[in-house]
Length: 200
Image (cartoon, rainbow, N blue to C red; front, side, top):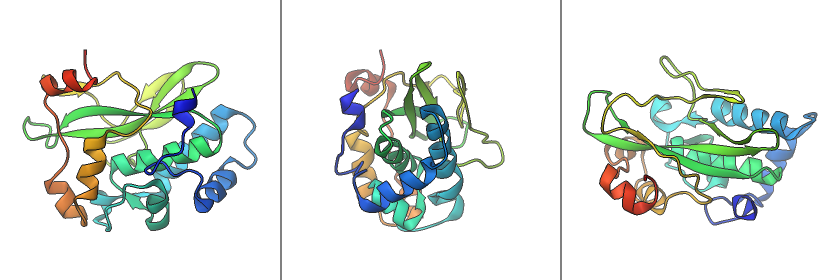
């Protein structure tokens, strides 16, 4: 599990503000499950999804997401992982491929988390932020993510990564505003996903 607790440039959980926030969220919680739920709900509800709220800047490093209180789904998953790791709860990264308009092309990757819970193992959660038509919750062992796979070219990739996908991080680093990011969301074909280790 050590790789799912590591500090990286993106998941900089040893940043003083992340440690402070992680301790505050965990205060009064008795179990890893309770801490994980509190961290999930805090990121889901307190960090604004960049395109929902039309907020800048584009954040990708966990401490920057916390500072600016905004991020795309990927960035929110980076902060959630950092808060969990700061509480010594293993956390990884998961991805789906989704239609942007639910009608087909164009497609985009969508990022969320897997949390290792002592009683059930890996549990997937999606802190992108709820809105009309999106209702993600923490209710193990039942999985309630933000989106369901509906089209043939969509996919729910099973791999749990210890680090965010480099192509996702680079896509965020290349943009500065929420609308630029919306026009340049990262995507990979299902064939490429097989080569990338996402898909069997």
